[in-house]
Amino acid sequence: MKEAVNSELLAAREFFVEVDHPLAGKIKFPGAPYKLSETPWRIKHPAPTIGEHNDEIYGKMLGYSKQDLAKFKQIGVI
Image 1 (spheres, rainbow, N blue to C red):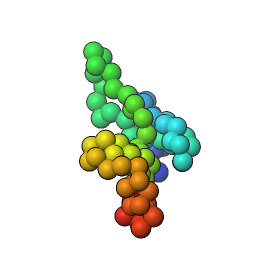
Image 2: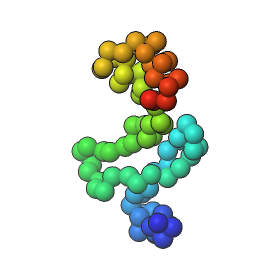
Image 3: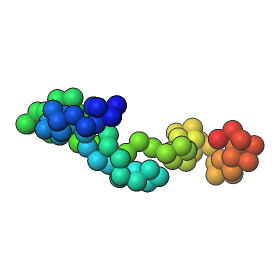
Image 4: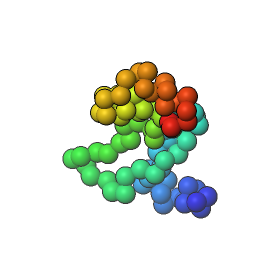
């Protein structure tokens, strides 16, 4: 991986992009494997942290209440 991150070819193609992650700080992520002038590609946000979307998934999509989520956390389900 070190060789890939330090590759002059990939640097010239701007393959790796720096992303500000809420826990890890600034880290390099692989970018698009292709470059299209009419439809540029970009990373919109970093990978989610563990449990970041629990409220959305369990609450909004699956219909569990805040009390259910608190209980799930307490007993170690999530």
